[in-house]
Length: 114
Ligand code: 5GP
Ligand code: ZN
Image (cartoon, rainbow, N blue to C red):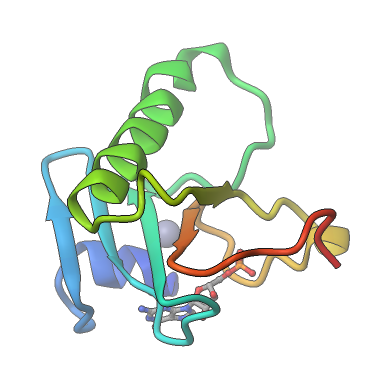
């Protein structure tokens, strides 16, 4: 989508610190990190969020989680633990309407979240 910031990052039109890229998925560091490791994992395709529910997207959503988990290993936070978060909609504080998995780690995190 032309006015979507994450589409622009996926297209290389806006710089980001890329940690992973293939034909379907891109991962990059969050510009405003909330933890020592804060990475966003997104599909190249513009998908606004987890809605509308579409079983055909299951492989892509699974791939986002798999790439995030692989990066956690690479970045050395897998043993200490990490959190994978998708903010969906207003109550979750979703700010960018291109689906993204937050990979957060490197410090102890509160549960339940605020
Ligand atoms: P949301 O609240 O939608 O789940 O989170 C959006 C995230 O995207 C925020 O953590 C924010 O810091 C991050 N973000 C927004 N714009 C940019 C950007 O231009 N570059 C990068 N690297 N991260 C961004
Ligand atoms: Zn987009």
